[in-house]
Image 1 (cartoon, rainbow, N blue to C red):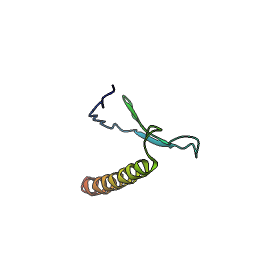
Image 2: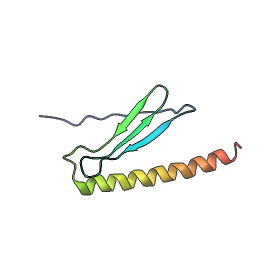
Image 3: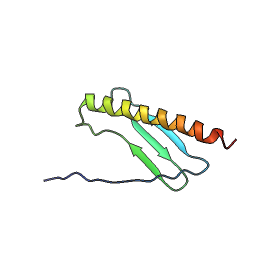
Length: 80
C-alpha cells in the first residue's frame, strides 16, 4: 500500500536563478526546471495523472506565476 508524501519547499533565490521548460512534444510530459546556486527543483506530472488534471494544474501554475510577476513589479518599483 502506498501513501501520499507531503513536502514543503522554500526556494530562496540568489542573483542568478534559471528557469526552463523542457518540452518533448507528444513523447512525454514537459518538465519545468528551476535552478539556483544551491538548489534545484523539477516539476512534472506522472504519466498516470489525467490529461485534464495536468492542464488544470498548468493553468493554475500560470495564473500564480503571473500574479507573482505582477507582485514583484509592484514591490521592486519602489526600490528603483
